Length: 430
Image (cartoon, rainbow, N blue to C red; front, side, top):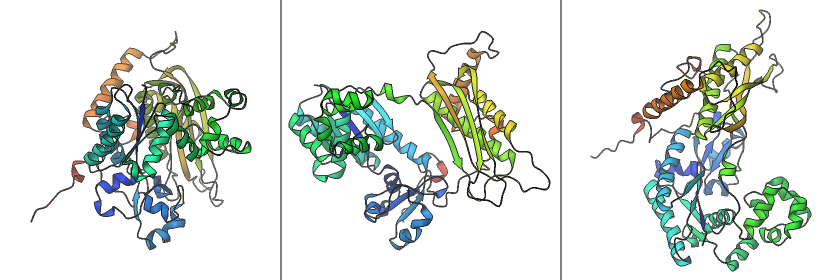
């Protein structure tokens, strides 16, 4: 029998912080976005205080202080390291593991036992990961990935499942569908949920009861697949969903913004490098590059400028140097000239978008290409291996600079306990 499991870390960012601050167990915890702008993660205790995802930090600061909420700046180095530990453990329980996001993965558990065994197996997975990493996870097991994600949400909500909810029979599936709001179904976004509400479809069961012909006439093929999955037919392949159509790395700058072109150039170079790294990670190439930078739209006391330019490359690439050169070149062409009598432009946000993404396995070459792609690939592999062994950006393009001069505002940043030797916890015995 085909069975899939979804392992979903509970309140992942907050749980990572609690691993190294056990005194925060039972106490509300929130994690802030880049530049400490807004709330991007909340513990269950914080949710009960009425704190919502995306709440601006300055608006809820008084509430956070009054309720003694633990506040942390986002520490993606720590979260990525803890995610690697969780995924490594999960890989031991399945011949096929698909990492879906930093805190979620799909496991193929087909033909591994009967229902009673699979329930115990799922509970064992949840228990071992929590014990080994300190990160609580919820496991959902079902014949389709959509139902498995539904099961993981039930496991997270109801403690009686002991970390694992199994949906393996028509009776269990029907009960789960009736209890599940349609807007929370994987693959049903807000727009589709509003359309379904027009037809008085409010639960997953309401949607699953519709005829396939009706669903096809009203919605896209993706929604039809979701409908099939809710009815027990597995038809979603993660490989079809994993490759992004575009990749963007951007940042809002702290304080007044950036007026120095050299600093803005370094920022754009680092954003382009990050995009290229993500591109290689998913084994893809891009043929389009866009750079943008703009001043604050809310300030009228300083010059207003908006930069946005795109270019189509002749040959798809994943080379960091080539993407940085393209992005920085467009920035240089569009940076406003400084007049001696005017105030400098204060750029508040900048970013790089790479698009027209294709598989790196099949790349359309250009007869007049001036770059030796074979040597370029070998150099990239060597640099990536050096950086893997010695740390992120050990080898970098000179345009990226040596010091981060466009850094984030992160007044509540925790240590990098698992990746920085200087931050390793020291236990003293008296």
